[in-house]
Each structure stands twice: as structure tokens, then as C-alpha cells.
Image (cartoon, helix red, strand yellow):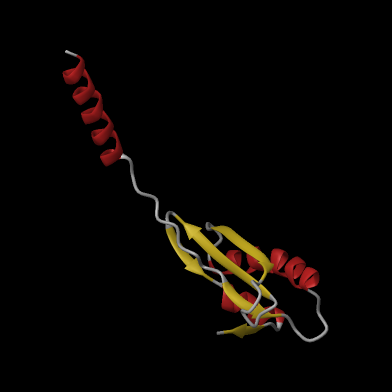
Length: 108
């Protein structure tokens, strides 16, 4: 009886894991260098206000998502950032447009 109970719960565990939806995360961050003389803090503050404006100008119904932070050492960049619009599950990236508006230089 104990062995069959073990198999029963093992089967329930396997079934439960197979029906859990898989969540895929995608890293949309790109590397940028702010305009000459601009600090990372200044760049991030401008990014924070520009991203929602750019998203709204393209799609007033979309929700903006953004990240702006220091770039990792050795990347050749000062900042890494993204700006996305999400409208009913459709994600559109606007990081390069925001960077252009801010005068930032993309780093490959």
C-alpha cells in the first residue's frame, strides 16, 4: 500500500509539472554610451521620462516597460537599457529610438 501511495503522488507531481506553463524571459537590454559629459544618473533620469513618451507616441494603448542601469565591466558601454511597449502581449522595442532622442551612442 505504501509503495502504491508513493507512485500515486509521484504521478501527480509529474502531471502538475507538465501542465505548469513555461515562462520564457528575454533580455532586451542594449548597451549605450550617454552623450559626452553626461553622467549615468543624468542619462537614466532622461531615459525614465523619454521611454513612456516614445511608447505613447507610437501606441497610446500600450504599457511601457523599461530598465536603465550601469553596463557590466568590460562591455565598452556606460549604460544598458531597454524600452518596450506591450499591447495585448505584442512587444515592440523602442530602445534605439529613445537612445537617438537622448543623443546616446549604441555600443555593439
